[in-house]
Length: 488
Ligand SMILES: [Zn+2]
Image (cartoon, rainbow, N blue to C red; front, side, top):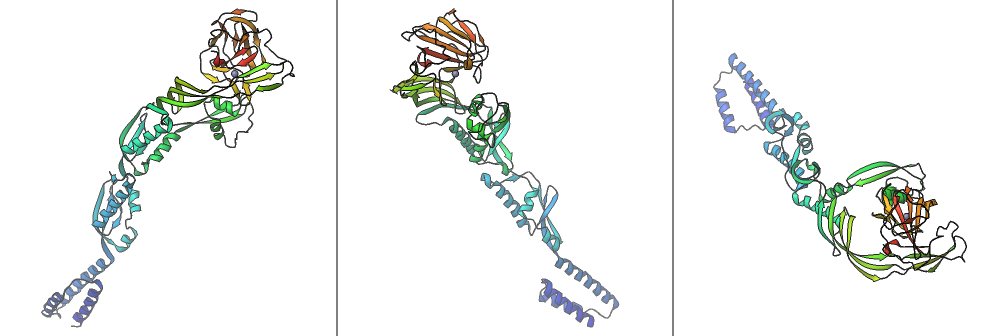
């Protein structure tokens, strides 16, 4: 009986420790059964011993292991959860967290399997699944809405409404619709399309982020070699940029930075991803610049000048139809002009100029009928005070070698090299009116020759003090320059 007593004590200890669910009835039955057994028999003792070993082994196994659920992603075990419910919950948690950015639940194409297992408690403790661990193994996706520009997806939004909001914001940014600016149409020049797209949730942008990216666009960088007489302003003009943009591309530069011919500077141009072509009607208040009339006063010293009458700008309300590309006017047609105040001309008295070329021009009424444009082209620079000095004519854009014509018939006073004017022509039209054509690449008339209105007299160039091919055209009345636009 010693055997049985010892076994009983051991059994009760184990049972209390392992919380096995064996009730008193079962114990009583086992006790009764055991009493009927001949314990002295060696066979019985052997079987009892074996049963005990198996039983204790089982107890040991169950007390050091635990049941768990292994989460397999694409066949790889990623870790364990305590139960099937917990395993599924953690997967759902990861997917819904990933979908938050688009207000949805993310999905995944990865295969996820749940396997019930029994593993060592130690293994479970070190391989418990967490959402961070799980996220490393699965690739969640959500259904986004992308904008394709020339077959390349540039931005992805959560849905079509947000994508449309970005496009509207972009158009408004450049077209600036208002009461005084009625935008009739605004279209993108690029080939764009909207596409439903499956993306990683991290690729989804909000409206502001997507807008910023489109505006920032691509950055194109090139080098520019400074030419004689270049300034930051002139370089900006040549590259169709703002001075500030040129400065921004060259760290350390300020407006006062002195640049040297031959020096290499950077031209950093920002090219937005989309180009808005807009058409509309604008009503704007415009300044009417005053004319500057210079009179030669022999009583003044050489090169001296005195303002005899201060000029005053006028003002007008102009209504025009326009075509704009990303906010820059490319076509403009004035449909209505209401003058509010007329400008008053400025009169400057000037001492005689040593290098005067007016000699030979006639004196007279200052009128000549039907002056025509010597060259058709965009006006690069207007008449008037610009950057501290008087621009005595208008600069008409042209290409080198392009022929230009006489604005009216008359007699060539001079045709040849004239300092800053380069190769230039001066024509006397009678009645005190003369015209000058500067920066030519070639002259086709000579001094003393008579010319007809519309006759080709020279070819456009960039000689003398010039920043590019154009025709500098002046009208002189009794030797003083006037605003040509008032006479053409
Ligand atoms: Zn000019």
